[in-house]
Amino acid sequence: MLEHLKTEMDVREVVIRPLLEKLGYSPAMVITERPLIYNRFFLGGKKPKTDRPLRGRADYICEASPRLRWVIEAKAPGEITDDEREQAYSYAVHAEIRAVLFCVISATHFEVYQTLATPETALLLSFTWEERDKMFDSLANIVSPAAIKRDFKEYVIDSGVALAPGLRSYVSSLHGKQTYTAAPEYLGVIIGTSVVITGGTIVRGVAGGIMMRLIPTHVTKAISDFANTMGISEVLFFTEAEALSTDPTKPTVFVSNKEFAFKEGMPVPSLTFFNATFPAPLTMNSKASAELIGFVDGNVFHGAIVAHAVNPEYGPFEIRADIELTLN
Image 1: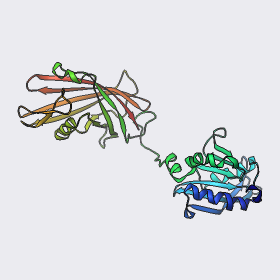
Image 2: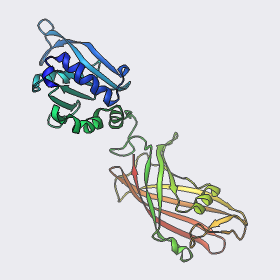
Image 3: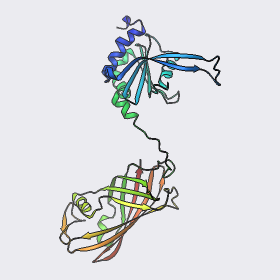
Image 4: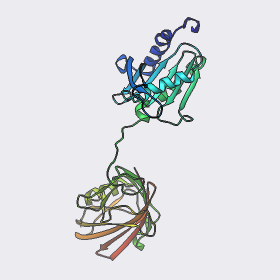
């Protein structure tokens, strides 16, 4: 087949168009022959009288989404030169395109580069015509519409004050676990067990301070149902601090207060039998408070929870748990 490919136009029609279709790009997702104008070409300081205007024409602009593009520069069969790579790069970084990737295809050779990468790390994939079939899956994993959208996600520049160095001004999701380390003797069965934290947020309050919202996933349906009934399917902690501490010796202290209302006969989860319940023996109102104490190291919050509550039969008691959260 290669002996019939003599020109750049041959490469476009015989190699690139079928390749784009196989990668999942419809004609509506591909712009061809788009003219580009570079106001002036210069090195160092501008010299309007002598710097010359440049014009170019991008062979293919492929749109994985309205904001995610990559470009292909088609060349006649043969080895790809540095000049051809630079030409493709100049199209990718043009203000009217701003492509995330650029590709040079000469029929005999295929090269894919990441636009915003250092020269020594920019090359993502390189193969020859003979290798095209076995390398197709690797190519698709880089430039297919789904791959582009996966690897170049939407991002938002955060102009707020960071919660801690390296974090945004908010945490949109977090996950981790808390592991019980101390409890009264009659609740000793929980020591060493863990509760998985599967969601939550950290945001600044309108009037100041910071709120942390934790969403636990309980190990049994009985405990989960009980948490929903008691209104503790999520837990809110507050601090008056304006930033999260990064110093283990001076941790941030969050507090939480909650009132509980037990009704006689309501199902209470058993701590000794999996997913079993027993009826509450009496109706009572109770108050509980907790402190969440910790610090941030990178994007990980390390700390402990100390909860205080009152049991009408046994009196006040305290439960402690270590907690570790990854902040995103």
